[in-house]
Amino acid sequence: MTAPDPDGLLAEQLLRLTRRVHRIQKRHLERRELGITPAQSRLLRTLAHYGSPPRMADLAERLEVVPRAVTSLVDGLEANGKVRRVPDPANRRVIRIELTDDGRAALRELRAARRSAAKEILAPLGGEQREALGELLHTLIDGTVATRCGETSE
Image 1: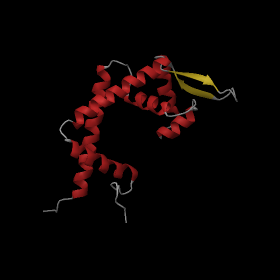
Image 2: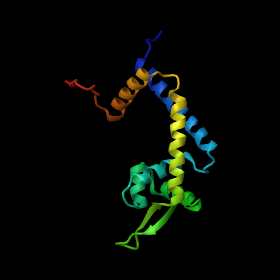
Image 3: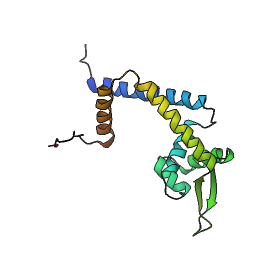
Image 4: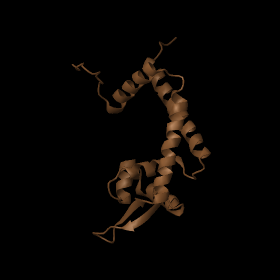
């Protein structure tokens, strides 16, 4: 008989939670009938973080996908009026991608869907558990040990 593998169990739990989060977010997106896929949603959220319209290559790099994948996503979003291609004012050969008003409205709906999904996922947790989970997730995301106010990490 083999000894239990706690790291393997944690890895499996994280993967199962990730799949559950994706399923619930997808369901909340579908309820809002935005006609936006999870990948398009990610592109819109990423686009919103830029101060000025980025190039497709910038989006591909930020999303860690091949440029062709971004082209397909932009094509779909452009067809639905969520983004538009605009020439770069400094170099007309360069095309940039910007959100439309409809795209900004869709982002607001996407954020609301994500909040609803998070509320559903976190419902079983109390306040202290949510705080502890937040600290743990922060540590895992940043890869550094989190410290509480007044504490120092050594």
